[in-house]
Image 1 (cartoon, rainbow, N blue to C red):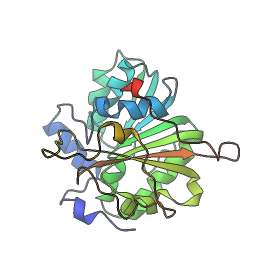
Image 2 (image 1 turned 120 degrees about the horizontal axis):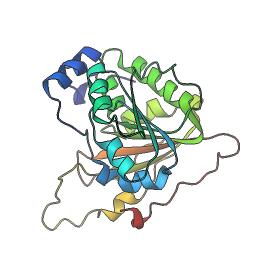
Image 3 (image 1 turned 30 degrees about the horizontal axis):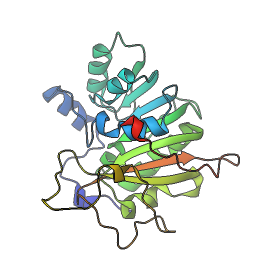
Image 4 (image 1 turned 90 degrees about the vertical axis):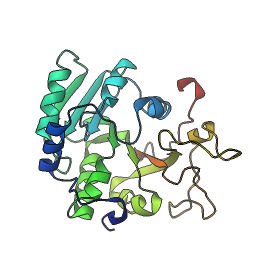
Length: 252
């Protein structure tokens, strides 16, 4: 398991100083990868509105705000940047459904075991994979995520990492996760004229993975820069055979 060298630049995305500086210089809201409108079919299918949600690496994203507008009742947001957290606390001081805490996702010992129904990660694992000691940082974060999720709960990961680079981190048996994979094109992607490949409806269908958890050898990405959504369900003896939820068109 290596650092995501090919997808990283010279910035250390796992460093608090980098993010503090960035948010001081640019305070405008920014969503990594996908906006909530694109992710809503997946969120509404896998995350009940009554869930206690942990948003890791929240930054100054509008994702949590949009979820509250869509009926979600309890979202704890954490980020390594104290600048981002103070900014968001001030912005949402009158929204009781949103709470903000400065925290390193590699050590979330403030929270007790099995405190959350869902953990949502939109680019935070990717940031650690571009930082120093990437495999160790990823292992520490994912161990904390697994500890915090209740049995039957979900780790909802949005990433640029395909199964070859993400499954080695997600598959350790200690996490006890049953994983489903979905793939969506990047925002603004347009198919070439005459391209009859996957439709937007097909994005709502789980990708059949090989027994090793990889994409089929003949699978072709509609968009070479697609984003991958890993739905990781924390199982126990009673829920080990829970099937994947079907994604319903009425949540589009």
